[in-house]
Length: 195
Image (cartoon, rainbow, N blue to C red; front, side, top):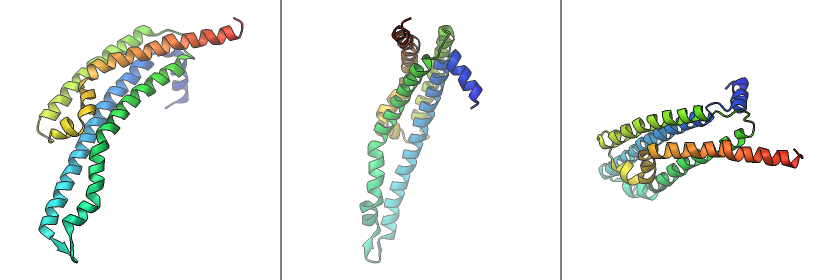
């Protein structure tokens, strides 16, 4: 990005909360969607390797299925067991990063653009509602086995299903941190200087 644009964005703070929320909505939706597709593909790989082992049988005195189960399948099972936790932590981490950025950039904010941020939050909410509907339709549509999203990625899929609730909540938290706490931080800095 252009340095002048970032400097102006930090100084004016115009729409920062909204831009971060819209990015959060899209990154959450596509991240969980692609993670589910990847886990589904990994499950297909696992099933194919087990079926292939039944067809091949023994190679050089070693059972192919047993060799697969002792090596690669352990990694596949580990990925399946931690995928939901990792996805959930990433979604919550994105929200915390946005709050931290709002706090840091709120320092340099000289103007209040609360109305612009509220309009961006409303826009992000509308996008979140549409993406939540598409996500539910995609999961129940039968394109991919829905157990990937309902069992393997249950918590993170639940977060995507709750995006219409999370987006305004996170947006308001960012606005409070950006406008409220940064003002207190500025006032404390000025009082330390004797003003």
